[in-house]
Picture 1: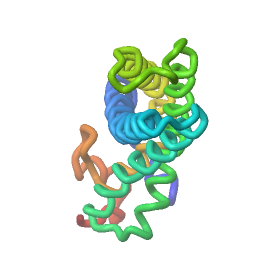
Picture 2: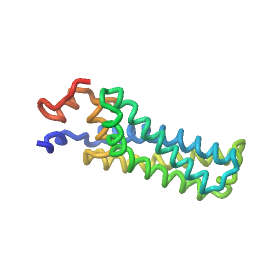
Picture 3: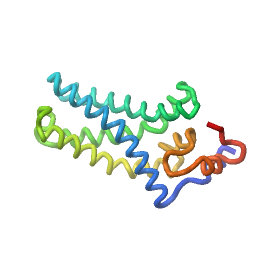
Picture 4: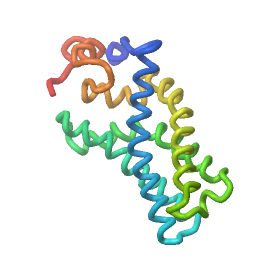
Length: 179
C-alpha cells in the first residue's frame, strides 16, 4: 500500500522544473546563511575555518527554516515538520555547501578579501552559481526516487508546479489530507 503513494512521479521536463525549483528554494536559504556567515566572520576578523563553520551552520539553519515554515503553515506541527525538512533538504544543502565553500576556497585571496571588495562578493556569487548548477541534478535524482523535495511536496501539496488533485492522485484514494 505504501508503494501506491509513489507511483506518479514527475519525469522529463516536469522533473527538471521541479528540481530547479527545489534547488532555487535550497539556494535561497543557503545563500542567506552563507552570505550572513561570511559577512559576520569577515567583519569580525575570524579565521577561515571559523568563518566557514559559521556560514555552513547558518546555511543549514536558514535552509531548514525555509522548508519548515511552509510545512507548518500547511497544518503540520513543528514536531512533524522538522523531520520532513531534514529528509527533504539535508542532501541538497550538504552538496550546495561543499561546492560553494570549495569554490570560495579555490579562488585565490577570496577568504582574505574585505567586505568592500568585488573579490569578496564576486566569489560568493560565483560559488553560489556553481553550487546551484551542481545541485540541480542531485535534486532531480532525489525527486525521481521520491526523496528530497518530493518529501516536502507530499506534505504541503503544491508550490512546485502541481496542484492538490495531482498530489491526491499520487497519494492514492483516501490518503490526501485537507490543508
